[in-house]
Figure 1 (cartoon, rainbow, N blue to C red):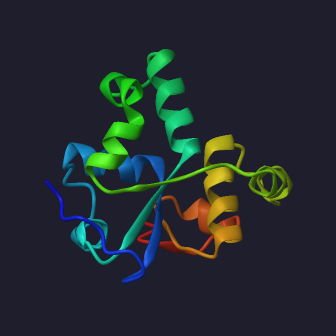
Figure 2 (tube, rainbow, N blue to C red):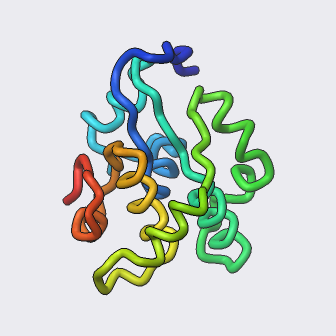
Figure 3 (cartoon, rainbow, N blue to C red):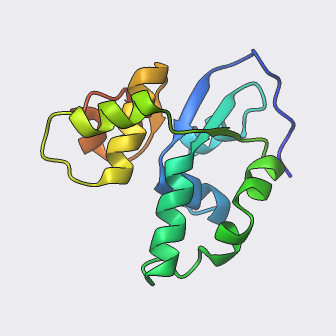
Length: 140
């Protein structure tokens, strides 16, 4: 079990959906420095409502075979790991729809918009999100 977070200390970080899934699965594809940042109790880790939407959508259509338990208790998982949910606002939606570029994935566009508006880095290996204007850590 992870340590309880200390509000106000450390950095704030938004997790991309694959980062969240790799974290929960203890996947070795997640770089050690990113895992350490997520695990650091001084840091505030945000998880977007867009990630819940994406995981449950992909589970429903058969593209994500490991998502069922997470879909059934998404908020519970966030609470157990002391992650903070990030709701989608009208402003997030407006920016996600207006971001320039060819990236068409609505989940990624929403995460990029949230990172931009909230002024926080996005933990992702998807360099295309940086191309949308989001500050990213780890992009491959």
